[in-house]
Length: 396
Length: 97
Picture 1 (cartoon, rainbow over the protein chains, first blue to last red):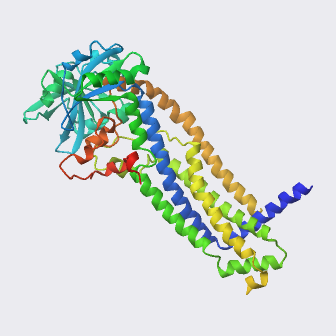
Picture 2 (picture 1 turned 180 degrees about the vertical axis):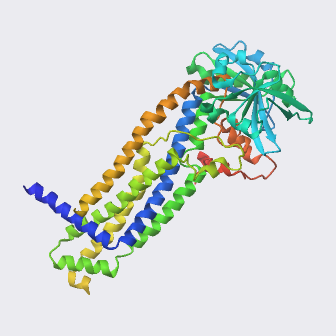
Picture 3 (picture 1 turned 90 degrees about the vertical axis):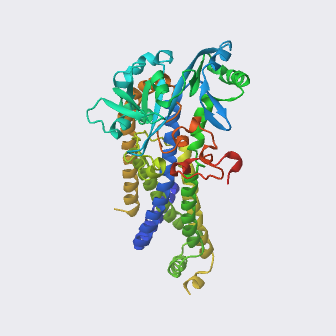
């Protein structure tokens, strides 16, 4: 019975708090809107970067175990294929494959393509690559190429099956389109032009005895680190990248400390500090008067604190729910369009960003702790200071 | 209707909307993602890909995993990083704010 009365009392206090908020609806709806906007910005970025990190980890799970690049004067340069002979007797290497790749700038459209020449027969899953292409995989040495969907659109082929790219000496190299990559692989292939190893060398004028990098496949994934160290010892002029390092890159790039996130968080924090400071610097005369009247009517200090708590919880809780829901919708249906200009920069090729948003409980807790809890503290403390003064003084 | 009931209704509507979104993901998006996963694995392994195609404006933002951390600054002595997508880069651990 006593318990029911306590619950009923809380309901009554909540009713009073909501009525009180509704009396100043313009001001309070404004606070909810601004507060929700701040939470929306922070949550959107958190969800977008979290989703991209998760997508990168999932999609790049089958990336080569080790990539070897030759370095000269701090820059990457083509690597002699003969280096493969120095790796031949390292126990645990399943295969080592040379690959040619580079960037091609299309001066007409301003787009950057990634051109890749691979020896399909030597690559793991190479025989299944046709499954990812609408058409055929380019035949070796035939001047054929498979295009990413965005490249095909950018080249404006309009039904043509051939296109040409410039070699470094400005002579033209012609390609016949053998197929287009499936739309489901856009996040990997949107800007790709894939061709045979020899055609790739021909386009970039890379001699036959050199490649852009060497891909090393390891039998036991637990030995990646050991084998990478052996390779680095035998090829001291190279940089050896391992699969765990590659996966770690995306965690770092899209970590919450990334530059843009810092700016978003600082902006949100600054807006919030101004709001909280305004609240904490004291109640308005009208609010003080209301507290005085309530005390004269027999309300205790604890009741007034509970009243303010319900008011703040209703405002900040609603803002939190609206902000987080809007952020999720923003990433799910609008592909994070607010952050797209920063994510794409001056890129001419715009791959679609159809990702499944990932939101972790830790992210929600972080946003809740940074927004709702300080707001509760900032509103309850001045109410406590005011409610401890004698009621007649508060009314005066 | 008591004001607290109206608030409860609003909160339940919002939570109901969130639950609908959750089921939309589970029933619509995730199965599509799973069916695409096999093809993506083939492409990654078959071409030896190391990076997502997100930003194609600069070589170090197109392939961050295989680029030097100093690549943004190596165009000429004293070069500054000027591509917008570079703002997504995290501050190195030992230079954090």
